[in-house]
Length: 134
Image (tube, rainbow, N blue to C red; front, side):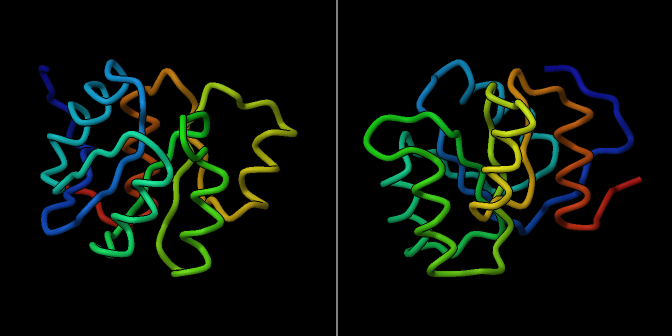
């Protein structure tokens, strides 16, 4: 993946937990995060995300909304019960105003629409960490 953007957030020393069940989406997300220098861990469902969150206490959690075993909304609520400060980002193609309001009311800090757009993704990561490497 070629990359020349000067707005890439510098996330060295940050750990990001990602819950995404679709392999193609996993490749896209990890490819985009590669340039941020963040340490990433990928899991396949919300239940695994909650378990790994308990073990790792990552700096950020990205949750797909529609996953098998446990969906992103349920995982969000369980993670919020453990830590009400960690940034949580919903990743979904379902972004009607009503759905976005539901995600934010459920505990997510941000919602990113699929398919992910690099600049929008980096902009939100920059807001989360208030850190861009210019």
